[in-house]
Length: 210
Ligand SMILES: *[C@@H]1O[C@H](CO)[C@@H](O)[C@H](O)[C@H]1NC(C)=O
Image 1 (cartoon, helix red, strand yellow):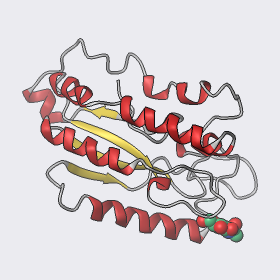
Image 2 (cartoon, rainbow, N blue to C red):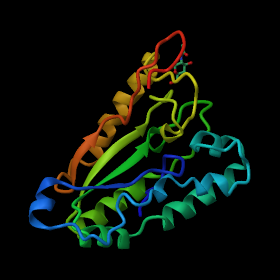
Image 3 (cartoon, rainbow, N blue to C red):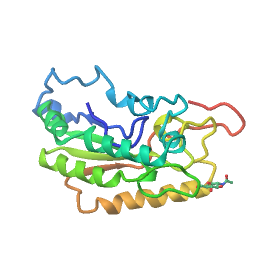
């Protein structure tokens, strides 16, 4: 179905959501393959590098030629999701999509190998959503230091350091404000900002509580 650009392994998830009013007013077309497959979790972008150490966007930017990485990402952003996906979603009777985005679309700190360039695509997707009567949930899916250590936070790590590092929290706060101001005039479409996906509690000494 859909994936936008930056995360989850491949560059932003993109998840269609069903609101109760859709159920009441506009039944879901059973042919829509929602729940039957999760292509947005298919890490083809990473697998295609042929380097098994590339598992997330951090390593995607770190462990290969930067120009190659950038051009592969740009091709992905230009082709993975199109306006037709929004048409299909609307025709299926769905009325919201969640579009995840990584913090590195907004700023990249020193030593961080992330590649930016996602924002214009997010803005384009908001326009497509408007064209087809769909609302968008903009979801900050990866925060500095990683808020959960999952590949879909952008950086798979054993000991995520978002929560224990006040610089990371301050950066995140500033990014959430940037998201809010970016879409201040799009409130007819961007109905929700999800400030941080799946922040997970980690005990400082040892195992993650997941
Ligand atoms: C906190 O995170 C920042 C990146 O946001 C990093 O530069 C800094 O070294 C980290 N501080 C500690 C104590 O790990």
